[in-house]
Image (cartoon, rainbow, N blue to C red; front, side, top):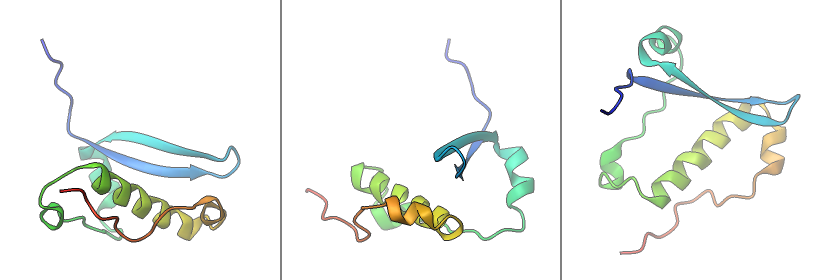
Length: 90
């Protein structure tokens, strides 16, 4: 029998003291209270033809790192990623 999980959200943070990225899994219901009045940056699945492939994951990761580096500029010094989309294989 497959265990059902409650709807969840992910919070990504950077801990500069330990130089770690932290992924927190939170019930969406609880996260909604935190995200109600903050900036939202939607990612439209339609723009990637609903293909959650390697390039989509790469772009998502780059976007998340870019956002974190706004408040933790030292992260940008560690980053050597291609900012622009990379051509997908057909």
